[in-house]
Length: 218
Image 1 (cartoon, one colour):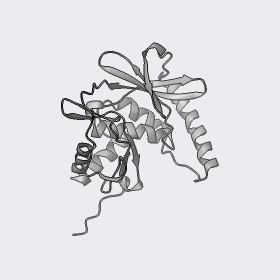
Image 2 (cartoon, rainbow, N blue to C red):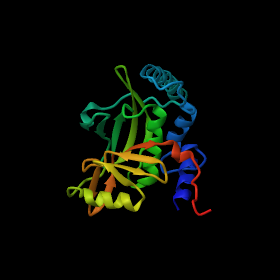
Image 3 (cartoon, one colour):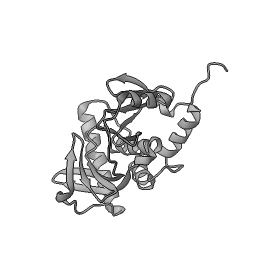
Image 4 (cartoon, rainbow, N blue to C red):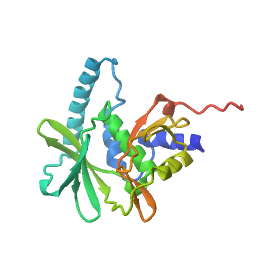
């Protein structure tokens, strides 16, 4: 089962198969390239990010993905990585700097992973917005109204059922898939009518996702 999921995820991240609301995300990620870096030093990583952002801006212009205006009157909240705005009665807009990720491609992959695992709160990439010198991704997501405080024991049980084990605090790792998901506290997982809704997730890939599963019984 996990091997099937791994194959599905590999195909989604490489753009070979679809995921809910993923077409624009896949198109942009595909045009960014493989995200290879020449070194692990802070200087090299900074240079890579600058070069990748320049490529991304070219893609945004080519695909007409610039969002020209965000209404400040619709602002409702913000965290370390994003600002949240009300779009309408059914959706919110989130402006994300991608600061939690080493590359923009990693951020886009995180969106695709979220949409695969949590389609009820899937992200739709509307485009990108320039705020002063910062480039921000603009994503749309269903608005969820919470009616009770989320029980983190239920979150833990749900993640365990899907092969993710807690590593520390509210972070989880799926050893079979090679996927990390972090920050699943009760502000990022809401409860409505007894159902858990994952509204803010931070997914990271490890090299193990791209490796074929080995079977010790063969």
